[in-house]
Length: 73
Image (tube, helix red, strand yellow):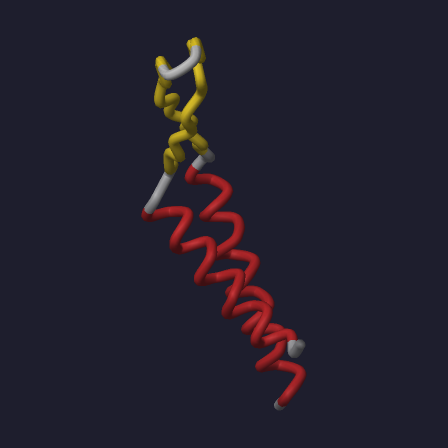
Protein backbone atom coordinates (compact mmCIF):
# COMPACT_ATOMS: atom_id res chain seq x y z
CA UNK A 1 0.00 0.00 0.00
CA UNK A 2 1.08 3.51 -0.63
CA UNK A 3 1.94 5.85 2.21
CA UNK A 4 -0.89 8.20 1.24
CA UNK A 5 -3.48 5.41 1.39
CA UNK A 6 -2.24 4.26 4.79
CA UNK A 7 -2.38 7.87 6.03
CA UNK A 8 -5.98 8.28 4.86
CA UNK A 9 -7.05 5.02 6.52
CA UNK A 10 -5.33 5.93 9.81
CA UNK A 11 -6.92 9.39 9.75
CA UNK A 12 -10.40 7.91 9.22
CA UNK A 13 -9.92 5.39 12.03
CA UNK A 14 -8.72 8.17 14.35
CA UNK A 15 -11.74 10.33 13.50
CA UNK A 16 -14.09 7.43 14.24
CA UNK A 17 -12.30 6.86 17.56
CA UNK A 18 -12.84 10.53 18.43
CA UNK A 19 -16.56 10.32 17.64
CA UNK A 20 -17.17 7.01 19.44
CA UNK A 21 -15.22 6.74 22.71
CA UNK A 22 -16.55 3.30 23.55
CA UNK A 23 -18.83 0.48 22.52
CA UNK A 24 -20.54 -2.44 24.23
CA UNK A 25 -21.11 -6.00 23.25
CA UNK A 26 -23.46 -8.39 25.02
CA UNK A 27 -22.89 -12.06 25.80
CA UNK A 28 -25.33 -14.57 27.23
CA UNK A 29 -24.15 -16.71 30.13
CA UNK A 30 -25.98 -19.80 31.29
CA UNK A 31 -26.66 -19.57 35.04
CA UNK A 32 -28.85 -22.64 35.66
CA UNK A 33 -29.46 -25.65 33.43
CA UNK A 34 -31.70 -28.21 35.11
CA UNK A 35 -33.36 -30.36 32.45
CA UNK A 36 -35.92 -28.25 30.58
CA UNK A 37 -35.35 -25.24 32.88
CA UNK A 38 -32.66 -22.80 31.80
CA UNK A 39 -31.82 -19.43 33.31
CA UNK A 40 -29.62 -17.15 31.23
CA UNK A 41 -28.07 -13.83 32.07
CA UNK A 42 -27.08 -11.14 29.57
CA UNK A 43 -23.77 -9.48 30.44
CA UNK A 44 -22.61 -6.15 28.98
CA UNK A 45 -18.91 -5.84 28.16
CA UNK A 46 -17.92 -2.20 27.63
CA UNK A 47 -14.76 -1.41 25.68
CA UNK A 48 -13.48 2.12 26.21
CA UNK A 49 -10.48 4.05 24.92
CA UNK A 50 -9.07 7.48 25.48
CA UNK A 51 -9.81 10.25 22.96
CA UNK A 52 -6.07 10.91 23.00
CA UNK A 53 -5.60 7.71 20.99
CA UNK A 54 -7.90 9.12 18.29
CA UNK A 55 -6.02 12.43 18.26
CA UNK A 56 -2.69 10.61 17.89
CA UNK A 57 -4.04 8.53 14.98
CA UNK A 58 -5.47 11.58 13.20
CA UNK A 59 -2.20 13.48 13.63
CA UNK A 60 -0.14 10.50 12.45
CA UNK A 61 -2.36 10.01 9.42
CA UNK A 62 -2.09 13.68 8.45
CA UNK A 63 1.70 13.50 8.80
CA UNK A 64 1.80 10.45 6.51
CA UNK A 65 -0.40 12.20 3.92
CA UNK A 66 1.76 15.33 3.98
CA UNK A 67 4.94 13.25 3.79
CA UNK A 68 3.66 11.39 0.72
CA UNK A 69 2.71 14.71 -0.92
CA UNK A 70 6.25 16.05 -0.41
CA UNK A 71 7.80 12.88 -1.85
CA UNK A 72 5.62 13.01 -4.97
CA UNK A 73 6.57 16.66 -5.71
